[in-house]
Each structure stands twice: as C-alpha cells, then as structure tokens.
Length: 124
Image (cartoon, rainbow, N blue to C red; front, side, top):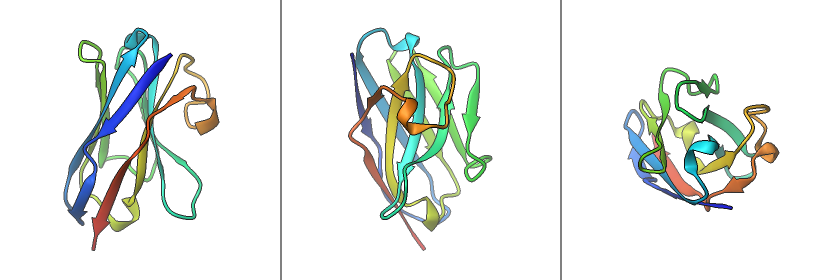
C-alpha cells in the first residue's frame, strides 16, 4: 500500500504558475511509476503527465507540453508538477496516482493508488 497526499493547488491568474506536490508514504516510493491526472466539472478524468521510477523518462499530454513539467525526488518520496503559462482551461481537480507497471500510462484505471486531489483554478 502507498498513501498519496497532494498539495499546492489554488487560485491563479491566466499566465501564472503553480507547483503541485504529491507526498507518498508506505511502500518504497521508487518502485512506483507516478502520474498526474485532472478532472474538470462534467468531464472525464484525463492524463496530464507521468514519470518513470528513476525520473529519467517523462510523458506529457499534448495539451500541456511545453508548459507543465513532472519531476520526482525519490529521497523525499515526492513527485511534483510544475505548471507554467496556466490557462483557464487548466482549471480542474488535480490528482496524483501510482502504479508499478510502465504500461498504459495515460489510462487512469490502470493506476492502483490515488490521492484525494487538489483544486487548481485559473481565472481569465
């Protein structure tokens, strides 16, 4: 089992930045592939970014490429999502998730563990 707790959400103006953190506890953090997803009201949960066990490989949705960066610090059991040039359409609840396998990274129901989510609101 691994427990995930997100933080760092909030209200920001368009063009601004936020950094989300996801702290993990429980089993060895470095054995998990980590992902960020988001869900806006009335919409399905969508993939944002993922990072492999060591942090050497990252994957991002087309909608956030060049603006969002995922990273991890295995010594701190934490994964981050740096979000720059935020747009109103980025408004959503952001969730971090963990899984052991590297396959199906963009599929939310392939992840085993989830945090409670943190709200990000971007005003125009």
